[in-house]
Length: 174
Image 1: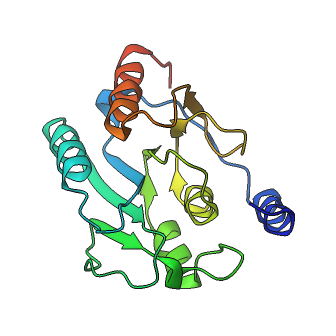
Image 2: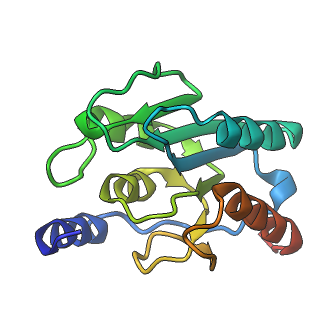
Image 3: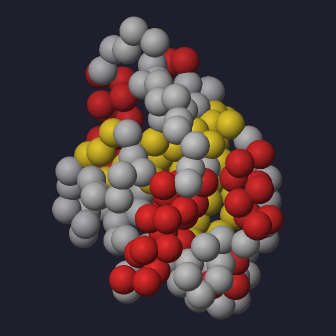
């Protein structure tokens, strides 16, 4: 990320209202937003099916939001799943207003960021999403409330399983 884009991101990050962070009890979480990196073929069945089945089995409402670094996205936009591409954000990586509005329209109990490599459009999605608790791989962007340290080359399913494991283990007074 170049310095100008990083400066603009930090500017928008500082303008975000303070969040009321609440560590969730996993059995009380009802709505989950999953942010992930899509492959260029937009064939993410292994990730999306595994995650969706696991969370639906636990009676969670799941919304998947992926990002593929290409201009034309072939996947349909569905209420529970969407892949965004380069046309969905501007030169600085800021998502278009309709995407920001859709992220802020709904409140989620939990956001799980499964991205392995830093991507400015995905960081904006994480920042603008309305979630009580945000978790993912350890980064220094200040967006996540709970981070798991793992190697970037690890499978996103491994990161997902680690996050779910720790969320189930930690007991909260909230």
